[in-house]
Length: 421
Image (tube, rainbow, N blue to C red; front, side, top):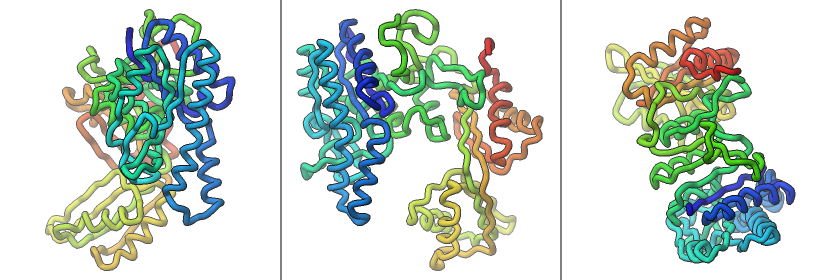
């Protein structure tokens, strides 16, 4: 017997037919003798609709009432999933976040989980029931419903899995695993059998959309093994693992120690619509970088790649960084009207960049990965504008028109193409 937390996203809960199909995945696990807790998202598009209603009601709404409205989407799907499971002969009961309870701080709209009491979930599973928990929400110290913000349902599932000591957490979505790159760009992309938490974290932060960063961070912190798998698979078909043998389909996200053979590069990611900003001849003094990026942070602007070059005389420095294209004008205005927090000679910038990255835990023990990446791009005539690195990734900023060519070239260069494609 295994203890499993199963999470279904919005597309898996889009209507009664999809809910019934997802419920069959749960029933299969129960019939295999496993204990299961389900975590659900709202129906696809429902959360955006609810947010729209709140904004239509009042642009200056109370964040506590926002959460009360927006949290209702998951309550609908949790109840429907419990109804469908019960109709299939699987004893089930729905639980809102406050009923578990899932404790959070009181940052309404973007709350963070502070603890989960697993007593009720343990009791139900031990009695053979399937608890269905609303994702994306919890209860504040003041007894109010809270929502967790972007990626909240995945985060809820991982937190519940950690609380109940689950053997794994299955994230059912509309793709059948994590691929070496976007298959829409590279048809030869391979589905990975396993990927480490660190690699998944880097890939999620660099543009891969399969899992949200918060959920991977929590899984890594609590050593919760994740499986990314498709809810569209036939629940009644034999369970075949990605290695072709009987097992759990999809991609396992796990600790690095579980991966026997570590590839130098495991994946290639792409993030488009990146804008570059350069401040020339910034008067260099202690705290100047903090002043520049603090100015942007005050406006809620997310900064990504950062490169600094100090002049020979040490008096001035050039600082280049990237922001999303959509934040470019806002960032420029914030820097130009910085209230004397820092001095610079001129500002230049451009939109239409793309960040291409290679990721792999094997990069730790292999020299020359960055150099080989630059050569592969040079061979295709692709100019590099910015470079940033970490222990297990190298990222470059290039013109967006060359983005997909760069991804295909690097995917082939590092031997990631599927041989039968």
